[in-house]
Length: 246
Ligand SMILES: C[S@@+](CC[C@H](N)C(=O)[O-])C[C@H]1O[C@@H](n2cnc3c(N)ncnc32)[C@H](O)[C@@H]1O
Image 1 (cartoon, rainbow, N blue to C red):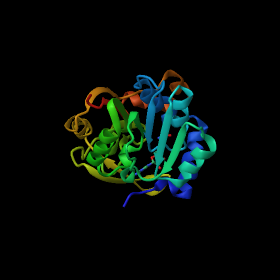
Image 2: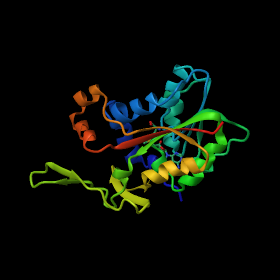
Image 3: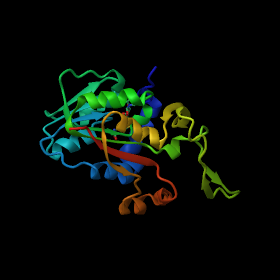
Image 4: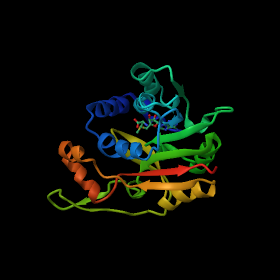
């Protein structure tokens, strides 16, 4: 059973308020990193897995992409995308990535921004991506960093009696699988995988690894969100860029 937490009204409202503030980990850490990994968008066909409200799909066409398909499990997200980021070159499909079937279509770039940690079967995902990627096409994804998803409690900062952060607790690292935590609502499910699994599954399926980024905040983020200095202590995200075999 796939979780569709973004269609929970309380979660969705909180999440959208956060994203609309423009003061987020996405804006200052993850999006700059994932965008920096893209070779070019010009004339490219792009598949965005877990496209959310379509901001990235719109960014792609604004920067020259010839066609973007955005896929998301959440009806709320797809409705928002169709409202806010509609464009004749973008098609939005509301379906779980796991069930996506696009016959006879190949993409120059497949991107997935912070959705992979919601997918239970990573091997199946990578095989699906391989089948949908053009020869030499790029696959770039970001996911919560394994040192964030590892600890079963997922309450990772150990603090002193004044509440000051002492250390980041890393535990249960080799125990891959489901983690359940509170993020706006209880019971948000993500899947923990080690760095070696994230990378070796790509290699085992014929991908060529091109870049791994453990991003820190861009300078303006540190000004607007001073707590992002903690990214120097531990990264929140990992971005992995690979290429399909030619
Ligand atoms: C953190 S949001 C990121 C949205 C977008 N990529 C962005 O960067 O703005 C994660 C997205 O993944 C979607 N998602 C989660 N599980 C999914 C699944 N199994 N299939 C398709 N989309 C999924 C959610 O509905 C949500 O829109």
